[in-house]
Amino acid sequence: MSRTLKIGIIGSGGIAGSHVKAYQELADVEIVAVADQIPGKAAQFIDFWRIPSAQAFDDYRKLLELELDGVSICTPNVAHYQTTVDSLRAGKNVMLEKPMSVTLEEAVEMAQTAKQTGFMLNVGFQPRYDPNMKIIQDVVQSGQLGKVYYVETGGGRRRGMPGGTFISKEIAGAGAMADIGCYSLDMALNAMGYPKPLTVSAYSSNYFGTNPLYHNEASRFDVEDFGVAMIRFEDDLVLNFKISWAMHMDTLGPTLFLGTDGGLKVTPAGKGPWSGVFDGSVGAITYFHDVRGHHTESQIPLIEHNKNLFNEKVRDFVEAVREGKPAPIPGEQIVRNQAIIDGIIRSSLLKREVTIDLL
Image (cartoon, rainbow, N blue to C red; front, side):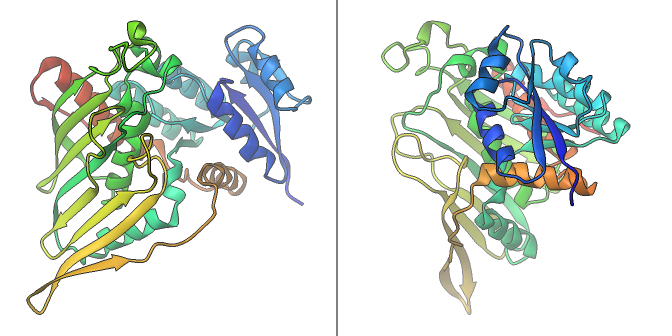
């Protein structure tokens, strides 16, 4: 019989509820503590989710004094860095919500702390658990596209701007890039084995978020709702990235992988004003190649499934903790994702190309 794993949750906002539901579906997992810096909020969360055996804390550092096998960090973005570092140093495995951090320097230190302490830092990109994402990765890494020299990814919502903590730079660090752009980057970069980025030239704006016609919190909206960038990588690879929370357009197009021997087009799933980005499943995958001199297009059949992708990522984290496996989505890898977002922010502010300094 498996030992019951003890889990703590830091931050009791909306996404924390999804973590609770995922943990509650797993055998031999117990949520024993919840922390939130707003006095009384953790206790209210415990009551709402009916986990009376859990202790409530206003200071997450008190939670970290408990004997825990892991913690889910569900705080606003700006708190990811300190809570993660403190959790790792306290001997806890970490399931961290995306984005990894606000700055590249924070992400590097977080990954280094995981390596130094020997505890897991796992970053929550649940779209990876769609089996169709694995198809994309298999095709790209199989070599059948030849050398991949250009990738285009991102996406956009005609209308899909959140509010609350998402639109404050002081709390979120960034807007659409941190919220949904990191998913698109992960889909493309993971398929290619996470190449090392070298430079970024970017532009961003927030014409929609700051306009009361389009957002009811326009007066406090100070993050980007649109961003575009050209990123250069090692091995003569470039990536065209574009993301939008709102626009007067139905789509910013599919993700494209252009190779010397073939190409791959991937469209996101979903319809309507909130769709059009890769924070969910895949809509279609098309393989372009030549057969005996003839242009050929092959539709790659999608795998039908009813997986709850969010639950799958939590399950994978729990299994890795229980079995002593490496992090399923290691922070050390996601540093490169954060490096690009950091570079986009810097380049947009400076209005010029910037370099990315990674070891």
